[in-house]
Image (cartoon, rainbow, N blue to C red):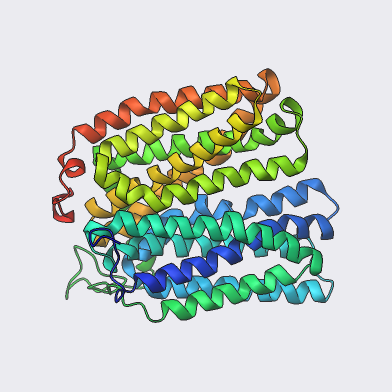
Length: 428
């Protein structure tokens, strides 16, 4: 492996990578097992869908506060606490299941708390990574991290979770709890940056500005406002954030109608649907493995804009064909292009954002990026119902291609994108 892309073996990155791998496999098993468990213990279809939705609601409610806490406290410690919270929730869920007391509200609460833990962990982890990896190797490090998460969650974890659920309803939940404990143990050895000042400190704090009772909430709100303002006033961060929202809305919208396309238009069995989804995951793994080298070879702007255009073209290809191999390749290309975009965009953000703002900027980014996903599912579902899933895929392809124009403009006019020597000190 070349020295410019390798990650130092002595760094804490490998512990973070191991923790992410352990957690991702467990998450994949939970993603597969939780809907199955909900269907098995609940009789109401709305309640089943509510439990599934409860895991994503915390991104809308807590992304901004979680980002602020990731800048106010030690990030490694927040990640460990998030792992322990999720492990405890899963253990309690298993105990309730064993006692035949796992009804709708306990299951809904468990799903919600697992989502809260995910929000805390992700905001802290993306903010922690630049402190354990040299800046010139961030793209390679992020590529490995995303690839490991994709393999663990979308391939290995979900397949194993579905199989283990047939062995016993509690089995995938128990293993998921163990995966979080293993992640917490690995993270104990990571040495990330410690905030220079305490949770209540800020630009205006000092010996004469001791916080009084109830000062924590105003300070938190001030931190959140600072993070939102920081992202909104930076044209490049603003463009990346809005683009991520559009991309994720299109991607989830296409996912929402893909099963209809497979079953009703292509007239394929359910097993083929799973195989086509796996093609997307395989493309993502390949994209994560090569993203760093691709960005270095062609530059950040071609890597970002080119793969955004590739996503749009793949959507149009799915809309235009009846041939299953073409759909499979197009879905694999979508996974590849989406992964390259994510790796390069996240690495760029980590490079240009000051360390003290990384948690909050990540929270703002994730709020927009994940908050648009339910909207995309609703819009594409409506389009599919009225004009068919092919039209929905065609709409997604056009929207994605149009998004290339504003993001290309923002990237080309910002010197921090093309000059890799720029540091976070250049950020506004």
